[in-house]
Image (cartoon, rainbow over all chains, first blue to last red; front, side, top):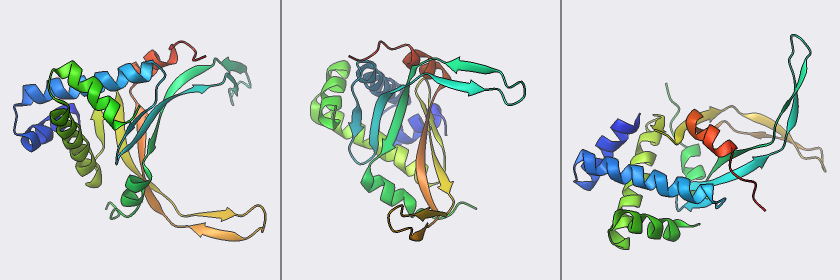
Length: 96
Length: 96
């Protein structure tokens, strides 16, 4: 499902127009990104938490050429689902 | 940052009350969870995508007792940040 379909689902849930929903969704994501950019973790009750983690620089080896190169230290966004939601998702029926 | 603080940030962004924001945020999360429960991946433009992935059953060994046990197959939520956002986050200033 893409952005558009999420908006449609959300608009019908909230009983508001799709363009209003688009604005809301964008504002939510922006608020999230803003907080994360300040190196703050963001947790959403019943769903999970987002956190910017620092990854150390590391060495990689190209398996064909055996050439070594350094991947510089960087930051990456990590998501961890909440314990409650994790338990719920575990039991979902198997997808055929 | 917890739910409450996200609501405060979002309420001021949207110029609506905090209880309205709470409702919105909950509806957004519910729409997300609903779609994910149908084994659909959900992607949010400029942020990333969520997907329920199947994990095979696996064997663990307790390092103290050497006892082996089987972790049953389960489902787990995976998040992948979008390429654009990944590049942005990489360059965040180092947290002191």
